[in-house]
Length: 114
Image (cartoon, rainbow, N blue to C red; front, side):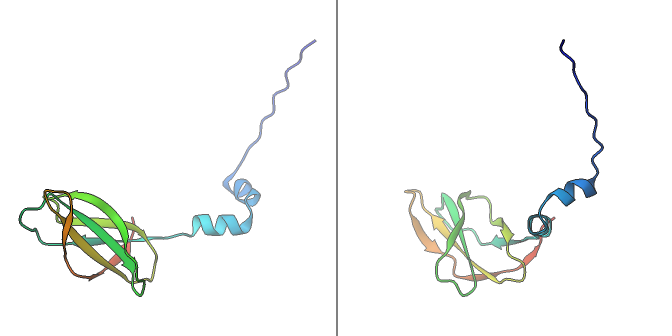
């Protein structure tokens, strides 16, 4: 004889959260990030732009994005830390695919992500 037993369980949000360790739920639910928009002026004979950023005080830049189309003059960098200052630089990429000019370091104004 093969009997099937059905179980029903009513789960609430409080029940689910109580099953998650406190440290995990705090870090997963309380993370808030900022974003900032890098802007620049167009350059002649450009194929694209590369956008770099770094936290103020750091020496090394990180790529935010490569090959931004030449008709775009802004790029929003997301997932930045709260209460941190960032610097950015934009490099022009020529028709041969090589970077040839940097915009000069600028401060990135951040705002909360929506």
